Length: 239
Image 1: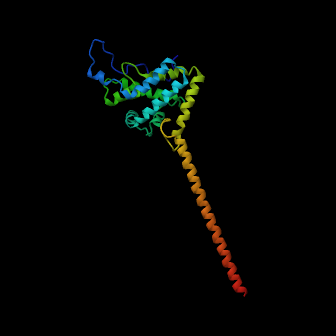
Image 2: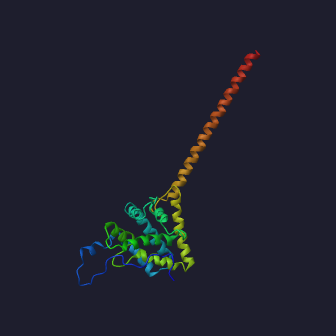
Image 3: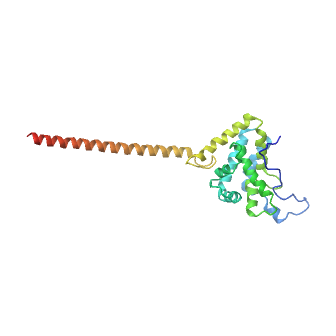
């Protein structure tokens, strides 16, 4: 039974395949997936072979979202154009901002939001270059096939197996926590921002303690000097 929250109906993401004997048009050639997407497609092919393998599922999720973040400067304007009034500029936070509000934030909600955008774009009769970019680079779509859409449907199905889905979703939510702190990195890619934050915190604590010790010692010095001055005056008056 399909989820009532899955508003996206299966649609055609690209033009229909032409007969094998018919030469490819220039537009069909333009819709071929770029070579830089091959690693993502390879990761997804492992999921097709073993759809309940946590390692395969998480590897695709992590690498896919990290890849999208590397294209943030192109993807964020497309989303903001479709959802005017959005405030977030970080891609992952922006996806959460426009996600389906009546279900908890989760890995399924994240991919469902990405897929719904792709579905709305695919329904257009005329696709400009930005639309084609979203369908190819975000939906990974060409020749009537979208691994991103298929993965979203798989996540919905996996919710019937709570053990697998919860483990995958917990990994996603744990990775997402970094976006809720001032130290925001990419989706488990590059430098581990957790250690950067810890280092900055330790440095500030040392600086604060050093400043406190300095003022404490200075205050004690002033009090000692005052005491010596009073003692001198008393001695003079007594003589």
